[in-house]
Amino acid sequence: MQKNLEILNKAVNEWMPEGRPVVQAPPAAELEAKLNLSLGEEGADWDVLEDAVRAYLHYNPDVSQAEFYKLLYSGRNKYALLGDWITSLSNATMHTYQVGPVATLMEMELIRQWNKLVGFDQGNGEGEGVMVAGGSQANLIGMMLARHHACPDYKTKGPQGKTLVAYVSDQAHYSGQKAANVLGIGTDNLIAVATDDAGRMRPDALADEIEKSIAKGHTPFFIGLTAGTTVTGAYDPVKACSEIAKAHDIWLHIDGAWGGPILFSDKHRSLLADSHLADSFAWDAHKLMNVPITAAVILVKHQGALKACCSGGGGDYLFHADENADYNLGERSIQCGRRADALKVWLSWKAIGNNGFAEKIDFLQGMKTECVSQIERCDSLQMLADARYLNVLFRYKPEHMDDEQELRKLNIEICKTMMRSGGPYVDYAQYKGRTGIRLILANTEVTQEHLQRLLDKVQRIGQELSA
Ligand SMILES: Cc1ncc(COP(=O)(O)O)c(C=O)c1O
Image 1 (cartoon, protein in one colour):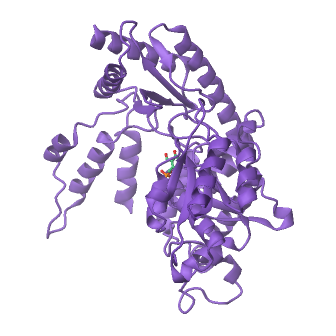
Image 2 (image 1 turned 30 degrees about the vertical axis):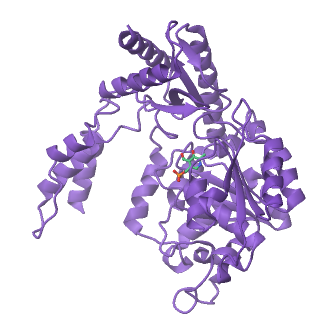
Image 3 (image 1 turned 30 degrees about the horizontal axis):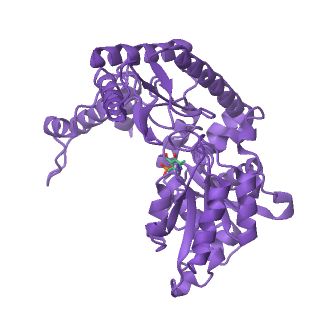
């Protein structure tokens, strides 16, 4: 163990120096040739392991830096990091109370707090949940709950000739397709509903699609709204869509993996008004709450729904009917062994508090507004979508260039050039046929100077490439 601590100490204090490039990974084939990662018959000594750890950290993008804008998380949450280390030290698992007693109680408290934020009425018997391995799994379980609601026999008997149809917006995350695949719905039966100019699902288009499915003799069973779309951060209109869901008795799920935390902020939570009208809700703590991956939850309005849908087996050897039976979270899960993700979330929530997360969102929304103004002041930069949340999608556009393909190529090359030069690290994405640079504001260390540096560099590289 002494050696572990020694290496950890070097990793934290020596191998990740301040000011190092945000990104420095060569192309995969080059790195593969450079590193010897082969495994063999004989064990290696600590020096070899130490070198591997050092290389691992050296080539990984430094996601803790303010100029890491590429993904839906950035920065370092020291409380959660401590929790992550202790979680591995304990190697608790979450199927039964006995093997993760404090983790179980922490997860239960987290679930109560998340339900409160979403607005499920726990005083009146609403609200349950279970932590899951990411937003994709939360969305999968949301769809599985919907399937169980529409066809309780599906779990035991399979589809029995029914064609179930699910609806998400054309801006929804691709995890909807994964879920439709895994659950035997068929990805062709996942309808991409048209969105408005701001990237929000159009309720009229949703109603039309449902009518079309019914006319074909199909069974609409799942509406998946997004709170904070991946590319532009749009929030689908919950109330109008919930009325349609109610009229047809369709399960309403909200994918709040990215945008759920807006509920912490009194100032901005109106973006996600009426979240309590959902039947289920996905929330990632490993995105805006910046807890190390993975940390996510599926919340459900209807108590008992998770167990009814997900349980099966294990009663003979694992889930004993003793005084702790109600605390065995495993029967709500589709996993058996499950990492105890609760500790890292609980420690950071305890240290930061609801107010701390609200301040984070309010601060970042302020930075976003300033960044959009900076972009709008530059003749050669152009916003490509509304920026209601913390996604800023913009592009470099020289006056003389109007061809979409040329502009796409140019903006992709700007991102790649910036990456090759060590940062800032952004990515490109497509929205409604146009390609832009996606900047995510998720790190409270970010300053106006950082953003100015990014916009200046985009323009400088853009000018050079298009000259
Ligand atoms: C809106 C949305 N939902 C779900 C997911 C999937 O989350 P995870 O990566 O935790 O599986 C993402 C990931 O970016 C997302 O943006």
